[in-house]
Length: 100
Image (cartoon, rainbow, N blue to C red; front, top):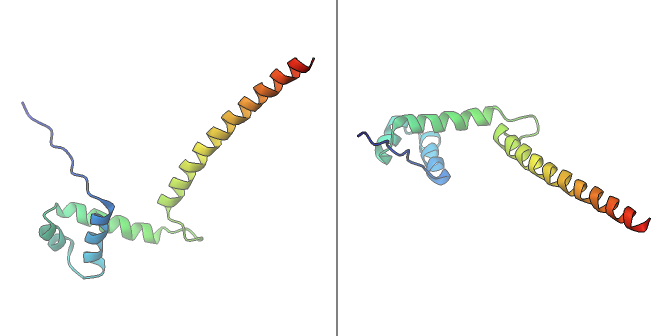
């Protein structure tokens, strides 16, 4: 039976350090990958994604990733507020009945 290989997870700090070796120190992606003992496709993708994120900054300096995170947070908050509003509507209807 063939076992599935587990995908290795790398921390954000590890990725950032690898990216800095390429962008700031001038090493190639292949050399960084070889020295760190990881696949060179990973380093290449991390560097490409980081460069793309920098070029995709919106006019107010927010990256698309940050916009997505803010959107997700706002949707969650909106859902909570709608639920609270429904609870208050029901409570108001209950107390109006009690007064009559």
